Length: 131
Length: 324
Ligand SMILES: [Zn+2]
Ligand SMILES: [Zn+2]
Image (tube, rainbow over all chains, first blue to last red; front, side, top):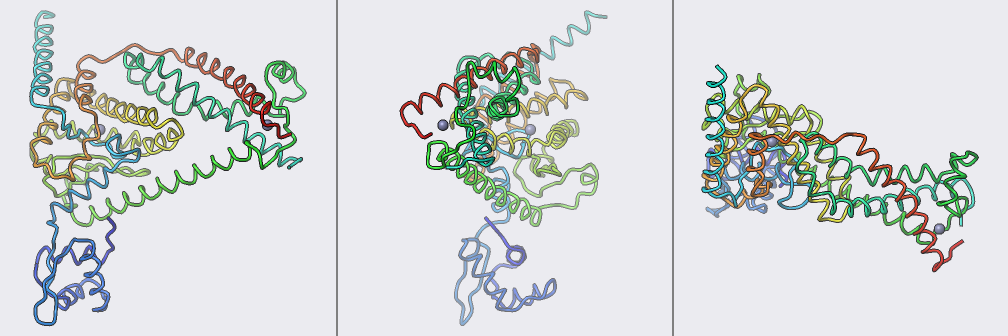
C-alpha cells in the first residue's frame, strides 16, 4: 500500500475529525502546507478508491470519514514491513523477536515453561551443592 | 558465430553457468544426504554450512570457469586438467546454440528476480516510512537507547532497514513486559541490527533463488532461524538463558492472546516448532563444531565433480546436437 505525503496528512486529519468535506480538509491542511483545493480533492479521491475512506453526499458536497481505524492501518503496515521476500509464510526480512505461531497451542507453551523451570531448579541445586 | 575475445568471454560465461547449475544440482543431492545432520552442530557451524550451500553454486561455477579458462593454458596444471576435462571450443561461440540460450535465460531470470525483489523492497520501505509517519512516539528515553517505540497495541518488536537497521518495539509489547524482559527483547533486536540481519537475509534470498524452490525456502528458513539463535545467544551474555527462554515464551503468549485480525498472520513466519527449537537451544546449546578443513575438502570434491560433470554434459549434449 503506497501512501503519498498529502494522503497521509489527510488520513491523519480525518481520524481526528470525521465527517468533513473537502473545504474543511483543505482549510485544515493549509496550516501545514500549501496545496490547492483540487490537489486535496484528488487525494481524497485516491484514498476513497483505496478503500481507506468512506463518503456520503450531503447537499452538494461529500462528507468523508476514515474507513480504516488508525490501529488497523498500523497493523497492516507492520504486516507489510514484515512481508517476506521469499514466499508467503516462509521467512521475513524483518527480524522479529518472536512470532505468532498459530500452531503453537497452550499445552506446548506450558511444556516449554515446565522445561525452563526444571532447568532453573537444577541450576539452583547445582549451586547449593557446589558450596 | 563469434571468433574472438568476445567468444572467449561468452564461453567463459557459459562455463560458469553450466558449472553453477551442475554445482547447484550436486549440492541439492548432497543436501538430501547430509541436510538432516546439520542440526546437531553448533549455531556458528550451522551458519557456515548454510552459507556454504547458498554460496556453493556461485563459487563452484566461478572456479570451474577459472580452471577451464585460457589463464593457465601453458601450464602443467592445464595439461593435466585437459586429460579429463576441457572446453573444446574456447575460441568459437555460436549464439544460436544451447550455450547462447542458457546465457539469455539466465540473464532474463536474474533481471526478473531483481525486478520482483526490487518491487518488494520499494513496498517495504514505503510501508516503514508510512508507519513512521503515523505511529512513532517521541519517547526520548528509548530513542536515546536507539529504539523506536511504535504507538500500537500489537505486541511486536522487530528490526528493519538494510544499511542502517533500526529496532522498533510496539507499545503493546513494551507495556506488558517488565524491565528485564524488555531489555532482553531490545538486546535481541540490537543483535539483529549489529549483524545486519535484514540485509544478509535479503542477500541469501537473492542468491538461493536459483535453487529448486523447496530447497531455497528451506535454506532461507534455516538461515532466518539461525539469525534468531545468534541474536538469542547475544542476550545470554547479560541474562540467564532461562530468563531469555521464559521471555520468549511470554512474548509468544502475548502474541496469541492479542486479537487476531487477518493482517496479523504473516508475522507468523516461523514454523510451529521454531519457538520450541529456540528454547531448547537456549537451555541446552549444541556445541559440536564442524572443522573448516572438512568443509574445504568437501568443496574440493564438489569442485572436481563439477568440472568433470561440466565436461561430460558438454560432450554428451554435443554428440547429439553438434554446433561447432
Ligand atoms: Zn529475532
Ligand atoms: Zn559447446
